[in-house]
Image (cartoon, rainbow, N blue to C red):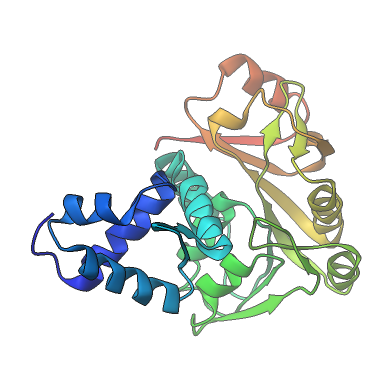
Amino acid sequence: MRNLPSAARQAQIREQFAARPGVSVSELARQFGVCVMTIRRDLTALEGKSHIQRTHGGAVLTERMMLEFDYRDRRGYQRAAKQAIAREARKLVQPGQRLILDTGTTTLELAALLKDGKDLTVITPSLAVASELQHAPGVEVILLGGVIRRGSPDLTGPATEHCLELFAADFAFQGADGIGTDGAIYNSDLRLARVDKIMRRVAAKSCVLADSKKIGLTALARNGTLADVAIFITDTAAPAAALRRFAKLGTQIITVTP
């Protein structure tokens, strides 16, 4: 790692603190083949950007950066499947529609595919989705109000629920933290579960996007079942027996190959 430009070295130092919070200045100097003073200047630069907080002999990531790394890891997990699911969901969207996108990482992949949309309105409680679409010329983004959920770039709470009640949408696209083998849909946060229920109520149709690893998982709060949604999109690794049970609920099942 010798002779790296300072910006590249600082980016890798951030990665080091994400993986090994206790790494020291002297360790970093040896790893990058530079002197201790160079590493200290790098740490000063990163601290000035609020990426790290200095400690005796080293540094730790700030809470903002820890959130960024955690969200990046969650987005990266099963990403090929999520992207394939998002591509299939994109086929359902027509120009002029009003869409609701929830806070999941799979719906964020869908948001990335909507940038070329024409005359779309996207309603979302997700800061990540809003950021993804804010410069899309054919998409009007409505960011719902609410309380920022600790540890995630999402808005929840009574204000979010009240804002949602003001709208009528053509389609709601939702993720899930788990899909029970009986078709129950789960969220890890009770507040998200309440918001997801309202999303389905104010949308003419709803679609759940969940990769196969979510099937068979449960979480804290149940927000309904696949019988409440029009379409369920997952990947081809999903258990066939579970998909047959889901189809009996009256939901259209679509499977995609990552």
